[in-house]
Length: 219
Image (cartoon, rainbow, N blue to C red; front, top):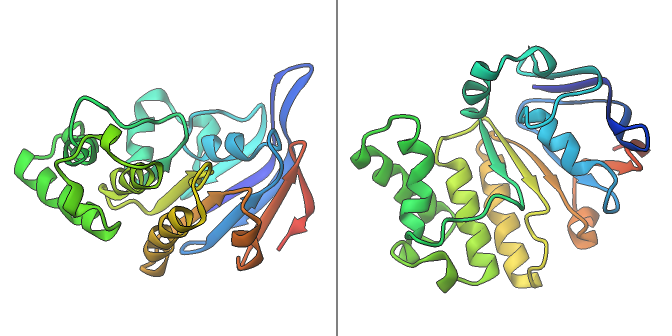
């Protein structure tokens, strides 16, 4: 489903984010990306979503070459992706239900259908009872679970989560990871970057990155 073929990403002569990375992720896999800050984890995830393009090599998502994808094709690619990135914040001037409905509304769904599916997504992450709350009324862990609901409301084939448990306490982090694992359990392919050693200790497959390179092999 996802393949990197000798992929490098260079922003400047002194800023190389990825160096000759080759890996493959099969449909339905749950894969964790591990490595220190600046290792290239976020860049790797952004390439899958066509937020970044490779400087060399090929990134294939469902057989589609991201480097050759035209701008008009990006929205269609992302309809199959659930994106949970740290810089994508909830809109504080509207309810969490409205936040969760937004991806459907911008793709032309009827308001009634969008609300029905948004409520179902919030229910899956245990946040339906807070549907009318505003984001600033929620804890960090609750906000992250709403971000997951918003990411999966389009019923994506792939979920990309960049440090989804950062700055959360253990209980909140476990709830966020439980929500992601639940989607993996029904066949969604999940890539999750994390520094959380407790999570990595229990992970089935971990890809380690260091200074933009695969480090210690991909288990």
